[in-house]
Amino acid sequence: MHLDQRKYDKNPLKPFEVIIIAILSAAFLFMMTMEILTDFSPRKLSVLLFLVSWIPLLFIHEFGHAIMAKIAGWKIIRISIGFGPRLLNTHAFGVPMEIRVIPLEGFVQTSPTTLHWVRTKNALIYFAGPGIELLIFFSILAVLGSEQMFTVTDNYLDIAIKSFAFAALAGAIINLIPIGIRTEDGTTPNDGLGILQCLFADSQSYAEWIKQNAKEESRK
Image (tube, rainbow, N blue to C red):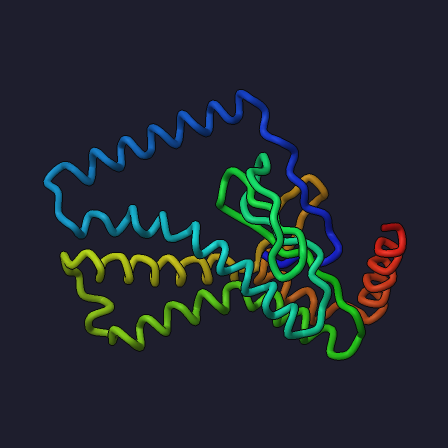
């Protein structure tokens, strides 16, 4: 997800929430393991590999936003991977990056530096996350070919590659469906809704955005 001037800090999880998440995760993994081991065949791993693929794809998705922001000449303020308590504070693209305990969503907080092509640049930054996932899917499709791509096999490498490709496609589609995401600061548009909103935003709102970011920089 790409964010504009909005803040997006999740409150730390409470101890009972951590326990509930741990129990549910363990139960889910146990049931999935039992299902895979019952009358095992390699193709049964495809669901597990599909889900596991979401973790590296989350990094790739957010880096897609950051790379496009760099290309557009926008300021990258912060990158966050996951939600819940912080596991690690580091840097990427020369800006702070935080990795949180539950890697199911993330964001890149950016700000424009000029009003030149500002709507188009904002739309491209929003699109870059799901766009890089679409690029992954169609690149793998081009290499494997449509016949092999949609043929079920028991080859482990083939299953892993195709699971990764279809997870990328699913992530792109989900992110491009225009919806709002609830945060503690209100509703934030996802990538699809953000593309639509930024194209019709007035120039004054972008000018205020730049001014607000300049004020925040001056306070540091």
